[in-house]
Length: 347
Image (cartoon, rainbow, N blue to C red; front, side, top):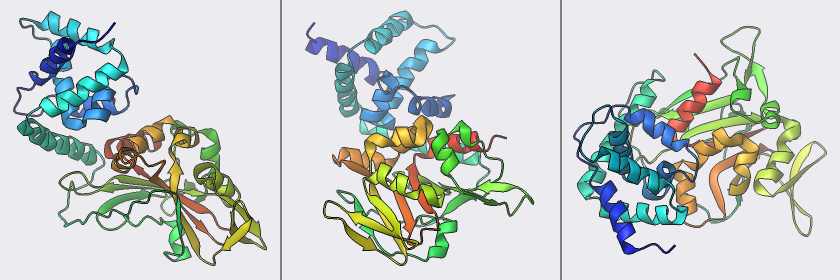
């Protein structure tokens, strides 16, 4: 059945008119986190992915009115309209989302930007962090394809993180024993993460995982959270091939990168920084929980919006010595990163 212009107009008006509020709605932060974990074809996820946070807010406000304990004229009709909308084809709903985004007044988008920052700040406060003031400059070094740079730093850095964002502007968590790896990672990846003696818990091993959360909310939400995983030496080649389609082998205890199709070898005495991960393997390698956080990150959304065949949300620092491990660093959306932290370090 063909979709008429009347159908579009009806649903656009439905969502645009549900916007009369002055303070952050109760339950807003939890609803935002739930929307980011929702099924890809659900209406709330379509609003979030194709319209952005403020457009999703218009959908959320309409949905909230139908689920509130109070009753008002037209509530039953609104609920029925939302159910009908949810049953529409994905293409139709995406088109409505884009039109709603354009129809919403700029004041609405600006107001929601303030609310979204408060929601994220509330999530950060759950970590026990304190907001700090700092001037940030956006680091934006995008590449259109897989790229390799060598060297960029000391090999000693690999025990902590090779992430250039990790500095005093970020709250870091690392070396915590007793992590529930199985709560987050697929079995093969969990078994590939190296461990070391805990510095704070004598006699215990701590998985080599570092998580970094921004301490400040810069206008425009320019920074993702980060998670770094140190990989065991004998698993490095697998992940380099799986994530980046690069073949790496060891000769005389030195790693070398084989450049196909001619078999030329690239050797370094320090480290490689490999960028440009295949998007389609992220879910399989890292699991759905991590993949959801990656795909909601600013970096991933930007890469996808530019039509890049790969994403720089996943990078890998590989040392030249075959006896050393490697560090995989992922860019994650802030709220999803908090949820991963809570799954790894349950209180």
